[in-house]
Length: 486
Ligand code: NAD
Image (cartoon, rainbow, N blue to C red):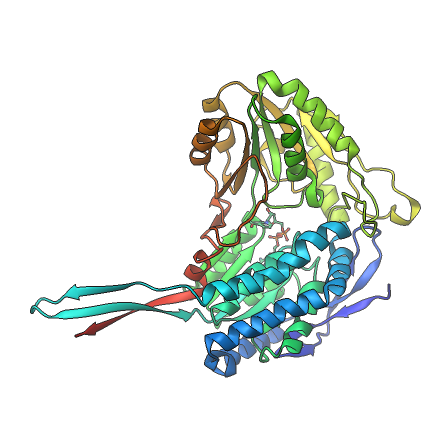
């Protein structure tokens, strides 16, 4: 494939910067293209365009017109599905079948679902008695928040970006998106779809670059941004919260996790192995909701470990372009180095390496890629950094437990609180666990089963706020109360 150029998309046009950086395919380290790095000037132009669009045709459109355009955007993504697929696979190295059934369709669905939802959401109203014996009526109206900065990670680039851009636009806001420096392609392609659909210039803008002292920090510090929605690491979330504090701009944060999978002795083992196999290894373990800690009730422990090892050994690692490939590389050589350092730490802390832990032998054309084996450890103390810190790779630690109380304490003993999955055939245990675990999402006998109408977000250091369904309104709109003396 010939190398591309990824420019900014500002006010419906392609904008260049004097500085560029490389975007490499993690499967073989080949050059995908050169990415333009926005300076303060380009970021300012994007924010100005977003402000002007808000005051212009976009802000004046009827809800029905806006929703029609968002449906056209969704259809545009699906019409160009092959291009989105190729772009996402080249940027991330994820297997084509995964991007084809998850990332791209969900990217389109995020526009349709939120467009349909927003036109049907009511607001509250209250009649009241006034002190002089009269009446008044209160009713709420929702107004768009304004210009929203959308800062995105690299693991599910189109899916997570549209998960925010979809509701933001449905609510009447305009956006400036800063995709991850690792994955600039699909956000750029979406600019073309916006123009084809007839979305007015300035409604959707994209600026490329890095985080600190680059497009990310210029955007989140920009005084004319009205709110910042961010998905990424917890420590980046802290920096962005500080930036947004100046000017009292609200933030919505979807951050890291160290999610537990809990297997009771009565679980359906075959379904559990498959479910947790996905939870640990899908997208090479680079899913925020993924499982890195598994706790198994002691009577099932040895059998679970043996079967989980067999599952990991059966995963077909290989060329992302092949339709039967189950696992691609991790996002970059730098990220693989981070995962390797946790592998060294695990061994130093006395882990048994049940499976993996190494760079696999790959065919010559993939040898330069960021490959890593599915990895399973046992035998670590709960205090080990490997058990406490988010690794974000295809790896997990498995530990035994005896009682329900004990496993609740183990699962909750983390600064994170994003997700958990519980595997049991006992309904009462399932419901008790569902309310005892300190997480934003708890799955019972499933994982990553998402209904976009439900609240999504993290407890503790995994985030602030909830998005999804009507909950997205909390962040993307301002609720105004109108009180009418009758
Ligand atoms: P990251 O925090 O390194 O980067 C995310 C984005 O923030 C990138 O676009 C980056 O350029 C930008 N950024 C970095 N520093 C910045 C700064 N100082 N100011 C402004 N922007 C800045 O995260 P990542 O490595 O891209 O993604 C992986 C992380 O994301 C993991 O921790 C994962 O758990 C988390 N994640 C969370 C969810 C969720 O829904 N909770 C979903 C996906 C990923």
